[in-house]
Image (cartoon, rainbow over all chains, first blue to last red; front, top):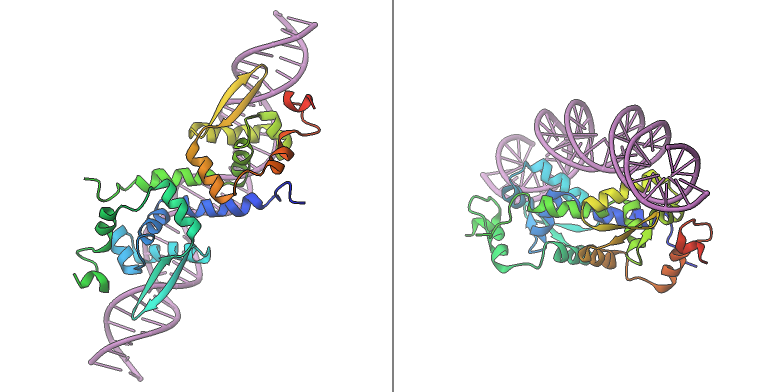
Length: 117
Length: 117
DNA sequence: TGCGCATATGCAATGACTGGCATATGATAG
DNA sequence: CTATCATATGCCAGTCATTGCATATGCGCA
């Protein structure tokens, strides 16, 4: 029966690619695939205003790609979509430990994890 | 040196995702990953006017994802980017032979390959 | 209860992409 | 050399995404 894909078969999957077709979202996902981070950490790391970060996170959250989890006053976002992880791995390359460290702890970041260092 | 990716590192790779973030381009690539096809075949298969098809093919060609090859009066386009092939495989799934046959030969297609059947 | 911090939302202007069409090119056959 | 067929290009208006900013929410703590 399903010999030919339905018309919006491609529309659905194009949406997934569109999500990643945005430099800032792509960078956010590249950070989150290493470890979950709070909004203020992303704000410091990406050097963009907080509402802007939250907006992109909403897009990713509503697409079911990331999940948010409250921890005290902060909200931590995590990448939960394994397919997106595979796509990132394919295009951005595998996660390098050195690069991961460079993004995990930031000097002037107010978030709890960075403050402990 | 390259501990932190350059700012447009993500811009470059987002462009690649943007290419696939379009239903018609995605469908074209899904056809071309099976076998090279001429423009008129795609025109028949996708049911869109020829200038529209050519426009999308140009976008893909200028991005280096597909290549064109003249054969007599027709121009055949082929998918030449292995990374894109991997991305398609990951999101659209592997190529099913049945589905491939359904797209290869079309009843009312003026292209040479279809006319022979 | 009220204050402050972290995050979220709503809105508006700009800019980019989309898709439709008229027309140009280029090769081939007669 | 002309006509025709396949494909390519240029241009335009409509639509959608982007991003910047003002402000709202909500939670913890004094």
